[in-house]
Length: 400
Image 1 (cartoon, rainbow, N blue to C red):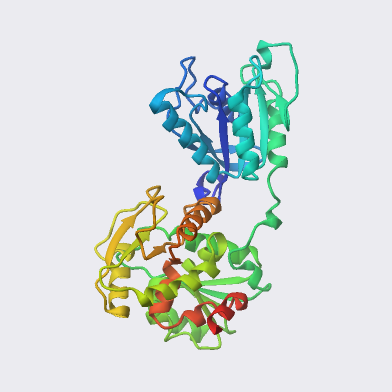
Image 2: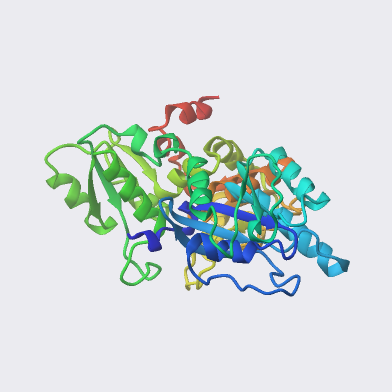
């Protein structure tokens, strides 16, 4: 996987904030040395947050989120400003772009305070140094010119300095593996599998296993039994697509850890503890209760789609109740959740950690239990405890 193929959920997200005509789009073009953003002297050219996947050397792959002017006016303008502030919930870093020739304005100060309140690392970029000889300071600031290129290299170095080291990042499964451990990845190839590739969480887990110095063996569920019999040493863990839990649980010996890609995603960027506790709520659902089944991405629905078909079918078989279902995908996750008795969410592989955490926070704040596809399936298959045994700090929750 090259830098340009880095998943959006794994890219560092940098939000660009500032007043109209502060030079946000020109700055993006200067940082990337490309004409990516539309530049215009007309105020309000950027009317909605726009995500742009790109590379910033020496930082590597990032996601730039260009936002509307925080000084926009009128009824429509206030909606745009609100959307700009909403971006703060999803970014890892903020660049607050100030028109240096006009000085700090009230909107610049307000967005800075909002960024600090959310504990987001930020840089105040005093732009248009070519238009003024006056130099003044601001918190964590640098003077630049997007037109002449003055201090653009220095700005990129400041951005890189704010990025956490790779060693500080949570591992998907690698922290539970020793060098030369064997790991079996079970990847079914069925009608729902994308042609010519494996899906994102499977790619990410495979990479994490290899980075840990462990050995990865990849097989289909239909060949799993043969694969295990022919391995020279017993694998430490078998990681399967959650949809194959019902079959795989009967093939994998009980002395081998068993979990799923979706459960690993819940631990990696969600809240595995919350998902384990919340899944019990589905056992007490009643006829007519409404639940939300949510996915972070948008994709073409198959005839036996997991979210809209399989999960309702498994839930019906588990509790024998007539439940009302609503579905969301992509950015369509609702803000108002109090009407739901539970939320069942996918692993969120295309969302970054902040986006996933925001969804979980909204559920918790409104008193709605939120669980995960993998945890839900393991629960309905009667193997929830086994599926999290590799994480004893979480499996202990099931003893209570």
